Image 1: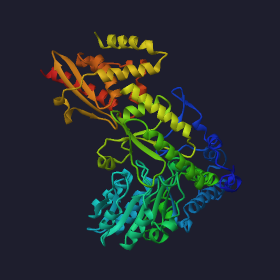
Image 2: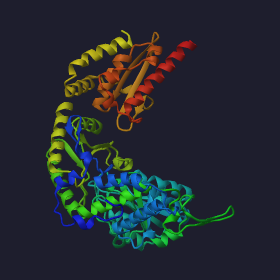
Image 3: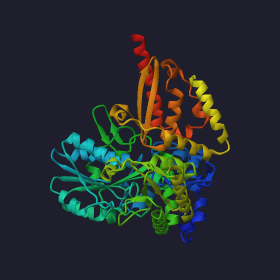
Image 4: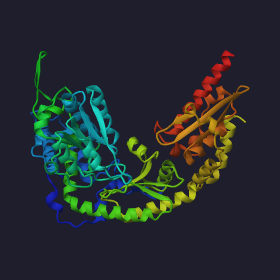
Length: 419
Length: 143
């Protein structure tokens, strides 16, 4: 596999074959505690196909060099592959230009960048920032920090008991002091797919810009930033089958131009004297220092991989898993699903009467089943439901209904052990 | 009995589970279920050892130069392990607790429950037990 070469054309006509897809993910074929691994912690991080693993390895074996600097052969090659990944990222989100694609460490850094560079510059005392009840801590804390600093106010969109955002309440929160709305596209803890298109339209009418936390949306569905008309969107490579430590911040060029750099250093400068520094052009203005080169290239390969499978097929298979999982889990006596929104991604959060999520998680792991337990970095959301946390099974397109059956059996077994 | 004598006794008890890891897990769960609940008056904010996912309440008292522990948790598995640790360490001298080598943890493979995360309630509890031992041994010196 040559880095930068798209594999989209090669596989596009293949039908969806989950067993064939599983062959692409070497990590899935192992035993954990004596049982074949069932990996249902995809919302925490996804597994990587061979193509992604090979891309990292090939980079270090064949052309590791610093980018945008050297004149030599390998540096040119590395730069080309890295910038090819930027173009793939642009196409992936349907951004209008690669100037709008900033590489980051991940979603958290993307949000912090916007809070810091946009928020600090444009928020005035008395201004308001709107987030929602179901935000991950990384879409709460950066806004709290900048609001504290600028004397702005954080407003929270409430949700109903099923985990749907209350759009009418959101409308009431919007006013001429609203400067930024930052909401999660898909909730990591509940699976709710928020009506972001409406949220964006309403925010724009009020004169606010909108940031989307796209971390949990991009593993499951195609995201078109022009169609959504969002102003910023952050995502993490490791959730879309790419390596950790890499991510994308999309921002409208017009807004990015107005923002000050996030960090100072190499790469982001045009000229430096001790008196004055002029900044580099977009997207490099926000990319100080040597980036995660292999991570960027491999993220590009992960995007190729998703394209080769096709979001329509991914979404269909995951929808089947969600419907099946919801049905069979609901039949377990004492099991309650937390988050039953109208639109959901393939995430099922649940509690079983009398069983603490920690005990459930540990005892499922003993059966080779990996789920996530706890508050999922959403403590205010857990407070909203008055629960300490949940058990969460999150599915990816390489999961199967047979694995869901194992989860059901596993939960039944845990019940007999504990109750 | 000394700390090591009790540890050896527990290791011996667990040896029947060598080929039956699931039975071992069930045994720990049963210890947890049977562990007497901590008196509500000791479930205070001060006695909480808060982990990321499980909460432990640890109450320590000193009688005649020995430290007695009572503990509880909101999760059954944690309670099971607490039961074992309290059995080993409660009623011992502060200096012995402080210097204890808890080889039991590896010998009966509690590591898989305790985890490597710093935030695990059990890790924090082990730290807190040692802190109590330090506190009581210093009190003894001052007296």
